[in-house]
Length: 117
Image 1: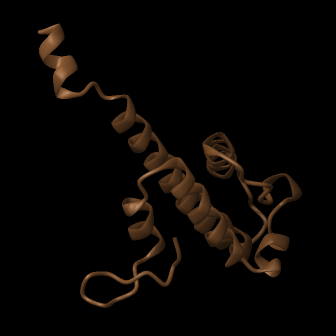
Image 2: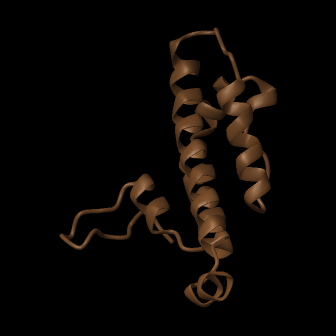
């Protein structure tokens, strides 16, 4: 996946649009890594050390970091708040998409529903 993917009308897809189109955990992980590559060193440096992004390898890394970002209460200054909000918003959405993907995978198929009816 790449931020350079285009909407059917030729416009670039937003990060959130790409998350909506992600079909697997691996797609979400790859997209999260691409998103993090756009976060500047200056932005990362604005965050408290405990809220700086680490290595993202799977869904649990994404959801854990989303939780830490949302829980983070940084009263430093407006620049730090903007970076924190940007990351928290994206990671919360990525975590939500992972939940949707997981529930789609675990939902019983039509045959299972008919068998148990």
